[in-house]
Amino acid sequence: MIKVVHIGIGPLGQKVVKYARERKGIEIVGAVDLDPQKIGQDLGEFCGLDSLNVPIMESLDDVLNEKNPDVAVVTTLSSLERIESQLKELGAAGLDIVSTCEELSYPWETQPEVAGRINETCKENNVTCLGTGVNPGFLMDYLPSVLSSVCQNVEKVRVSRVQDASSRRIPFQKKIGAGLTDGQFKEKEQNGSLRHVGLPESVYMIAKAMNWELDNVEETLQPVYAKEHIGSGYTDIGKNNPSGVEQIGRGFIDGEEKVTLHFRAAVGEEKSFDKVEIEGTPSFSSTINGGVNGDIATSAITVNAIASVTKAHSGLKTMLDVPVPSCFSEV
Image (cartoon, rainbow, N blue to C red; front, side):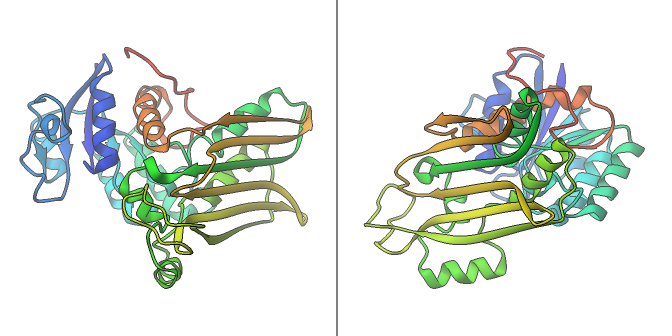
């Protein structure tokens, strides 16, 4: 039996709780959230389930004083810098960690000093920390790395993720700028609060899997504009207003583009799909028509990774380092 404490009970955290509750061998023993309106409520009832007899607490100490969790599932922040102290506290408490923090998915090139500190804390306390999710963590980095297993050589990798964000949770729709004016979009783009987080990390993860030393990584961002009025999202979007975001990440060696990641998410997008194209021997492409629902997939892979982190060696790990997560009915 793996005892789990959930850190962060927002929309994504609630879905993760629901999925974890269905798995035999996982026992939810605690929950932590800073929102005063959530503190003291029963976790199960708050997440739309039957009572779990697990109150949502204000701090980790409140859980540790009463329970003895094995793994912390963290669904709080996207920023590695902002989540560092939280991860180090969990590691120092002797808990393995699975987090949906996008910048944690492969931080060794983008934020090596922070990654080094988290890794040191984990090794000192003999625990494992993993950043995962559908993207980054699977579709645009881990999946193409695995698909390259059948290649004798690889020259280039291109991944495209295009999705209609209408069915995604509201925080995601807001994060990609759906429903903003053009001016609001540009303002949020400039202050860094509007974008899909994790594209450079995905570029570097693929390069690591290929054993490529990249000279340069670039990322571009631009709005997707509504061609007509859209009413399928969390708010109405007027014609010619931003309905989402389009980003491209590129990795270069000697001026040659080796990794290209195309991410486009917008409310009302006509066709959703995920596509991996590998140029090499053999060259091939693999497409998931309709795409993978990000909220379902992120919640699922987070739960599926719980068993993987308990089997991995200590330290800060990526999806390339841990035993392959898979859907399981019982630990």
